[in-house]
Length: 566
Image (cartoon, rainbow, N blue to C red; front, side, top):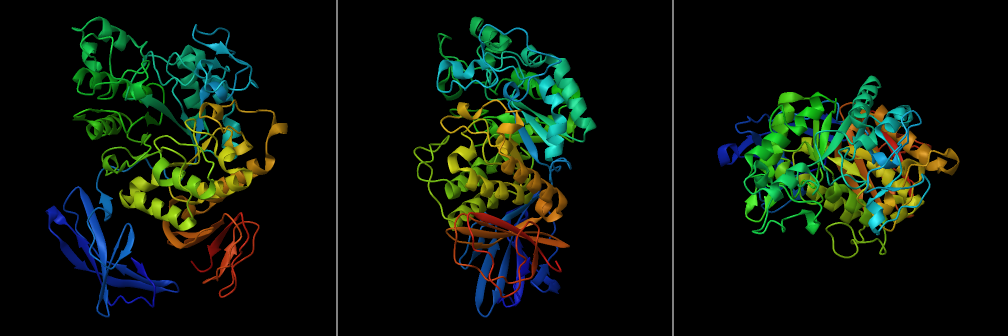
């Protein structure tokens, strides 16, 4: 732990709870530098998870330091720092930049064109508007394929992308494919099994990873499992779903009949879907070369009424990955508080909608921001201090290792485009936060060239514009430069996080590893200048910092500095 030199900390203890009993170890001064005093203590790890916090004593005062920050009063264990002894996430994940691809909308293949469509599909030209909010919104097919993705890998590598997230590639009766009609094959409309195998092989040759997307909460109503289950109450598949007495009524995702909900109480379902080397989850890792999975609707999967097998399911999927492909990354879609499944042996991380996306949008958006999933009415409007407090609250509930393996994102295929919600000027600020804060940043295909889509999540799923004359070249250059900056500086990839200042219109935070400290300032509007407490060199086209002199106060703007002698 680091304290300021002027802090009233005559003694520092570490409090942990081995086997549930409080225990204290006194810390010693490890070293001093220009920025403060570092305290170190060695604490035995008795249980699978070490929970700990610091107690600072001096001049008659006692102060706790935990994941939420400083407190002069007693605190619960809920926000203690945590260290998990479970197997770690794959080494390749931390420091990566991820790119989301909705396969139908990313790229067509001249060598492997789509020549026929299934009966549910409505053909669309590449520049045709999305029919959002209508029945055709989920039926339009633009003709993008996995072959097309493979042919664009050099573009992605040049952008600085390390890993791809493919939204579902299983056969279905919609363009989003979250209503899978089979888990046995890759949809022929996207190029089939051969296309996915070629894509992963080509990506690996370029040092890139590929993760898939699977629904463990539901299937489509055209899936053979569901058809057999509904037709035959004595079948093995009958236990895969939740039927009422007449079997025409059943539980489904969000009440949508085409997505019947899975019952994880069925041992046979678990065996087929995610337990063991012959499961769907395992097969696409070992046979197709995937490097992990994003799990759809993870907050609901395994939960129905009194039954709650959510954590049990997460652990089982993690166990399968550990056994068949231990370098696989497992990330869950979770719109809310995912801390219960991020304590070590569940998901490696989740999509940080709650701990990143929503607070950033509340700070950079406005009062006309539309309703988002799970939040009735318009999102709140935050100042910088409120944004930082929400981020700290969610980070405090999970181990640091899980926090750094969350997927951070400004938008996705499930929401309007960030640029359309905040404007191009503030998009730049969001991108700066995305690529300088902890986590695995995700770019939704097209964000980097200025793709819009404000009115509906389907409106955000516009086809990628490969005509460079329509790109916002400034935005493209911004993404390239900030991705390159992140790759060049260990502090931005793997460093800790310390909030230095948070006010209505400006936030300043530090990312640090031993040997490098980077400070980032993001301002949504012009503000009173802050005074620089240290010397630092600009890593972008901005002024250096001089101790005692004013820091930049322009806005909307962002600045990144490397602290000298760090």
